[in-house]
Image 1 (cartoon, rainbow, N blue to C red):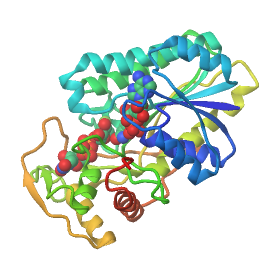
Image 2 (cartoon, helix red, strand yellow):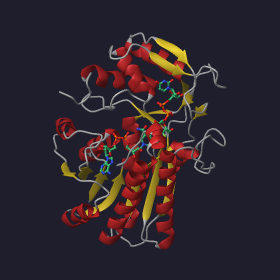
Image 3 (cartoon, helix red, strand yellow):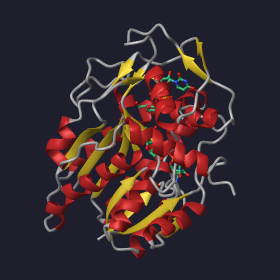
Length: 343
Ligand code: NAD
Ligand code: UFG
């Protein structure tokens, strides 16, 4: 069994690749290196002792995908490739529709031709928009508020429509909550371009002196202390969720009948506020994080956290790592790699 991983040198994919290699599962990583670097392959090899096969290609290039399916004996795909900055998607929606929707369409089309019928897709809690209720379960209303979220929803819809068209398909949309942290080795982690959009990368850059202070976007939300609440999940827990989800395909590998479409939340079920996150980082790592309260960030919601029970019942997964490990590993990565993957 070989698993094709699109966006394979990216943040979440590289952590997933490590676990798959450690479980002796063959993988092919495909990436156009738009938001990642080939040096990640060296780091994966350092951790696992195995060098993953790498194909530099764009998912929108269907000929390249056809060649990959012809060359390797692939039976499942984990599809991480895409653009992921919400604000950028508002400014430049066409590039987001092209990369995320057209790219996914090309991938599905190549899979169809190659008769590769098992897919795990990186979806996002952003598909729930302003939550209908909390905690968010998979039956909550889907109502996105930006092009990035719309892209995720459209790809989920394509997956579901395909499953309705032919029962050969098995398609799982994993809806991630807020991935943070890094591999405990400190060899791989998140390497944001420029000024980080996300909370924890910003906090670690303040801790390392790269940024002066954190801006806390709003202290007047209807939450425990007024700052926004999210469900932060350790990236290694998230990666393990993909490996567990692959297990859903075991039963179909021998038959022609797929499992159809499933959407599954990957979160911890716990919500923490921005100020709680800052305090936790300070306590675990013994570093003070200067911050100032700023106006709310456009488009942000009060609170977002998962009901993660479906993940447990369907794929036997639950998050194992707490806030302490998230903070420790995020700082371990940042302090060992102050410039990310730059030498
Ligand atoms: P990332 O940017 O580190 O990884 C994405 C990878 O895809 C990058 O290596 C990039 O070079 C590659 N890529 C982009 N467009 C491509 C294309 N057209 N062809 C080939 N490769 C391409 O991001 P990540 O945080 O690891 O996210 C992975 C997936 O998870 C994305 O689909 C993202 O939308 C989704 N997701 C991320 C978060 C988060 O907060 N990190 C939350 C929810 C969902
Ligand atoms: N925040 C700050 N200061 C910062 C950055 C963030 O106060 O410098 C706050 C935000 O206002 C929010 C919380 O920290 O309350 C988390 O913000 P992030 O930007 O880290 O995460 P979001 O929840 O806004 O979005 C993330 C991903 C999206 C994904 C979503 C899914 O960036 O791609 O989770 O829940 F869609």
